[in-house]
Length: 172
Image (tube, rainbow, N blue to C red; front, side):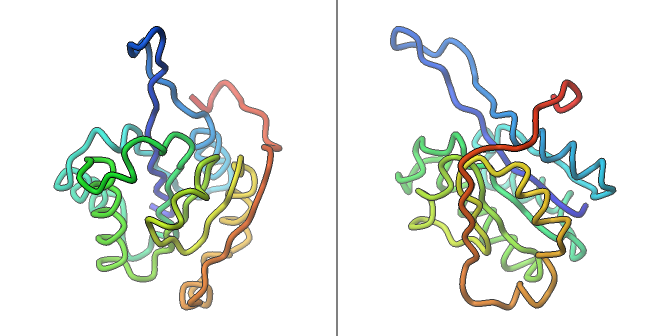
């Protein structure tokens, strides 16, 4: 698999109770565009529903030494990530550490509306701030994931305020 995208959903609260899950369309849009460009891509949704063992098993079933990028969509990641005892924090930390140790040439990228708030908690190779679905596709297609960038000590940070790709029916 060339690209593995991890995302989670949020919950819409109405009158203090959860009424429905909310999913962001960005990762689905990204997956569609990558596949249209012959880049293999797998999206794993509901990341925080898994435990640490399950997420390592999922990672190892999808990621290999040939994987270019493991990416995280942080649009709905504000919940519980600052609590080191939360499942969200534990699963994310476990996944990032496992990818770094087991697949050292794979770049770890974070994007989405809340990506910027995670830079003090986790270390990513690249961060795409804002609504960056088109820019992430361009980043992959440009070859920005080659080995010379993997060895760069600093983090690349890009900031985008809006999406340029319209969402299509086959994304979901």
